[in-house]
Length: 146
View (cartoon, rainbow, N blue to C red):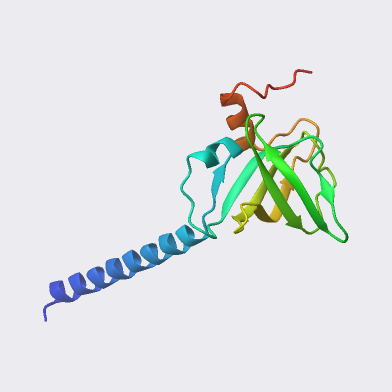
């Protein structure tokens, strides 16, 4: 084997290794991806059973039901559609009605969204970007002026 052939084989092996590493990385990221939906988007979405998604919107007024322990049920709305959510865990301190929220989880067999994490806004002027963009597109949410 000549020097040129050795050099080309090393370069080819390195490129093959990098391609394999990139393919494995993209595959792993694809498996962990969860897509963001507003309640109105779910009517047209095709979801596989157990598929993880992020559900965002506003906590619907009058829907928070606290069971014994850390079990909580509430509805997430975009003011047109709403989705019932069940969560078992400690809610963020600023979680309350008519505030922005993003939940992550999947739909159960009964059609209720089973959340395993709940993110609430962290101050009086913050709205999660995905939620704000979707509500602005529908003409529902407007930025507050100070």
